[in-house]
Structures are given as C-alpha cells and as structure tokens.
Amino acid sequence: MDARFRKRVDLVAALLTLCLVGLVWFAPAGGAARAITAQVPSSHPLGGLNIGGLTYESTPAQADQSMAEARALHAQVVRVEVPWAVLEPHGANLIAPGALAFTDRLAGDATADGIRVIMTVDRTPCWASSSPTSLLRACIPGTSSKANAWPPSNPADYAAIASYLAGRYGTHLAAIEVWNEPDQANQLYFAGPNKPQRYAALLRAAYPAIKQANPNVPVLAGSLVGSNGVFLRALYAAGIKGYYDGLAVHFYTLTLASLRSIHEVQLANGDTKPLWLDEFGWSSCYPRYRTQQEQACVTAQTQATDLADTFRSVAHTTYIAAVLAYKLQSSPQEEFGVLSPNGALKPAFAALARVLSSPSGPVSSVTLTLSRRGGRLVASGSGPVGDYMELEAFQGSVLRYRALFTLNRFNRYSIVLPAVLGTRGLRVRVYQYWAGLGRAAQKSV
Image (tube, rainbow, N blue to C red):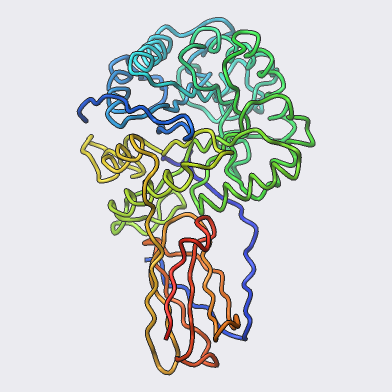
C-alpha cells in the first residue's frame, strides 16, 4: 500500500464506564504452486484478495502470474484497480490496446480458474478531468498526474467507460466498484470540493449505464474508509439510494467494530444493501518500523493470525457479501502483502489459503491471567483482533468495575484494577464485543 492507499478510520469515541473511580492502563503498542479452487458454501461471504491493478506498464504475463497465485490461495474473487486514465488516455472511445490486453487476459484467466473479478474504476484521464487549469496543463496522457484524482467534469463520460467494462466483461465480474475512497481526507483519490454531491452524481450516472450494458453486474458504491457514518449520511442526502447493489468499505483499524458501526448507520437510514469489505489488512513491518501507511506494524505471524481471525469472525455475518484482504504482494514501500516484494511466501499466504478454503473455523480465544502487583490486581492476556474489549470485575454477583479497552498491536492487553477493589474475592471477566459473552475468559481470586 503506497501513499495512495493510506487509511484513516473515524470511529465514534468509546465511553469508558467505571463502577468505581479507577484508572485503566493500556499495554504499549509494541511464486506459489497452483491449487484446485475449494468449494466454499454459499452461506459464507465471497472470499478473496486484492491483486496488482492495471498500470501503464502492465502486461498479460503479469495478469497470468497474479491469477495463478490467487488460484493457489483458493480465492473466489479478486479486486483489481482499472484506472480510467490508463484504459482510455487520449479521448472517448479510444481504448489503449495494451491496457485492453491486460484486462482481457485477467478476465479470461479468472474465468478459467473459477474466480470472479471486482473492477474498481477510478482515475480520470486528462481529457475528462475537472481539475484546475494549473493541474490540467501538467496532465500528460500516459503518465500519472494529480489531475487524475479529480472526478470528471461530465459524469456521463465516466458512465460510458463503466458501461463499456460491464458489457465486455459482464460474465467475468463479481462487481464494478464506482471509484475508490471518495471520503479519504487526502486529495489522492477523489480531489476537489463538494465530495458527497460529486460522488453521488457519478454514481447516479454510472448505475443505469452499467445496468443497461449488463443488468446482472452488481454495482458497488462507497468504497468508504470512514465508519462513523458522516460521509455516508451526506451521500444519502445527495440521493444515492437506488443506485447501488452493495456498499464497499475499507476498514484497517478495528475492522469488526467498523463494520458494525457502518451497518448501524445503514439501518438507521433504511439501507439494507450488503457490505463488501474489499480492503483490510496488516503490514508485517515490525520490528523494522513501528508504523507504515498510518497503520501499526505487526510481525509476520501476527499478520497471518489477524487475517485468519477476521475472515472467520465474519464468516456467518449475513449483512456482509464479500471479504477481500489487502493484498497479494508487498512492495518495497509497504508490507501488507501475503507475498514479499521478491515473491517469497509469508506466513500469511498459508493462513489465507486455509481460511479461504475453509472459512468456518476457530478464532483466537480471549485469554486472561490475574496477578498481584503492589497491592493491586492486574488482568492481562490476549484476544482476537478487530473490536473493542470489555473487562468486568464482580464481588459476588455485584458488578463493581467495568472498563472498555482495545488490544495492542500484538493483540495483548494489561489492565491494573483500582486499588479499592483489593486483590481477593473478585471474579473477573473479559470478552470481545463481536464474539460476545459466550466466548469470554473468566478467572476468580
């Protein structure tokens, strides 16, 4: 994930509820073989990952390699960026032959392997961009430019290229995703003012055009990074309802809590379209770095565990239609891939292959150890990634203390209980919100 893929999640601040006055302390953050695609029950969300997208240098051979690795991972679906600026750089209806060769090969390989493709269509070509004149002067077809991040002056131009893709690749597609991350705080994806209104106009133009080309191609809206619902509510106000079949979300921080939060915003606004979690992941950059692309670095083994736990946590969530990890291969700038930059398998590769082949399975347990330190009780342990945790301390049947907390980057915690509770005659319970009390850890002293 280079700088263009930086994620920022806006979560509603969690309230810390204490039954006794006390202090909560947080632990410090500290080429693949081919395989037969597994038959995953239809009750599970589609499972897959993000692969390398179309660039000015893409070749059919790169498409072959990516799809071979996706097949080895048992992916049902892959997500690929198809930049409009690369596909149609010089004008309407002037498709670049090299770009078309790459997308044709990718779609053909996917179908041969029983895999479907989400095509994310973004990046306006120079000739269609609404960017300021100063940026347009520097916009050269065939090269990346800041002008490409601005939406088109005429949404119908975008609708035409989306319609073209739906007509050409309809039977190969899991969905067409309308743009990428319009609510990002930076200007790298969807630049300019009035973002909700301009994105809604793009969606309202693209949806009927795609459906006219192929009514069976699902259309994904949103591609949202914010889970607090502020941008989504603005989109509802701008009239997006009725112009999408699913809502794409990209949640890297507290992934499970973010899914729950945005779904609650949907329900409050009468929106029952399924969520497509088509970007999430962890960078295995620890201990060389502490953060990368605004995310906490983890170890290679933690990355593997986190990916598996997240897939299995949502395996039976009815409002989630698809789950796709970010991403296939790391680059020298970031390490979110399940392959290293040179193509070596990371532990996450095997973990992802197992969970895509068998989505139902055990999730890491919540653990709890109680110890005494200076006349106070310390609760420590671990839990599965992705959501808020809660600790409750009881004296007999009376709840005396409650703390809401999050795990550190290694999915561990350590909480010093208030001295007034003492160190004996207590029952302590810890659980993850997503998993619920049925999977709580409990100890007594």
